[in-house]
Image 1 (cartoon, one colour):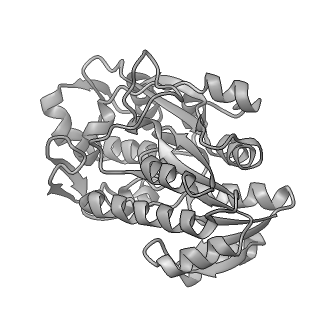
Image 2 (tube, helix red, strand yellow; image 1 turned 90 degrees about the vertical axis):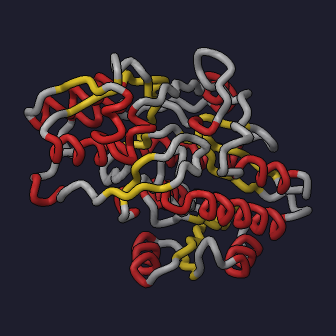
Image 3 (cartoon, helix red, strand yellow; image 1 turned 45 degrees about the vertical axis):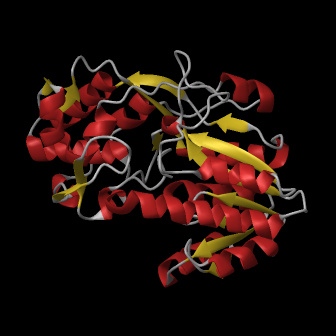
Length: 334
């Protein structure tokens, strides 16, 4: 079986490629640069040149495959609405290429995009319609065309070696500010999952997922943010302190919204349906291993901050001028 993977050289996508190849699949990976193409070739995947904005390339890649895993997303918080629109068009293009074939299309979404109805976000919850990202809506459109669509929702923290998302950003901020902070009482919760558990999970969904189903890749249902700050503070030997909501915007910059969000989520239904069990280190254990704390001269400084209008349907906030500081593989973004 040949699988077309978008985001194939990303933090999550590269692990999926390795998982698929290890299990005997042929992988066709989307690559928008020579470096990405080389990385895919070394991993043993076939290279398909193009990017999310090149609908012709996406169409040809999907048409040449027996199934598609879509993980790519342009994580540009300065231009989030256009990035979300590019994602919507990409999913519609992939769906059109697979129309009438009943071939699988695994679409990535995020648990923080949901309108949580209970104490934990579940597979039955729906996306917030006011949020710019419309991955799941585009997936539903593809399903109506005879595509076996499956939605896989990621938590805000997908962690593991090579992570360059939210946790490394928090560590850089703590180094820069000389304190590791949390908002208010710090009891707001972040769900998380290990990158390698996620890679295995994508394969299971591809193989055994039910058409039209939503699946949650959740290991930790909700880690109190204060505990994350405490692990970071201990490793950096800096004080751990509380910041008010007003102080959080200045301290965390573009991370303020996420530092204060309470987004616990469950994968109980998913685990029962697919017999999937996350088996690798949880978020706190993973951070505590120390691989998140390279020497300070390697880590570098926090990116310069610039203001951007609140295209997340929330108040204006600070975001980095350079998007290398923005999460590539987390649920918001995959």
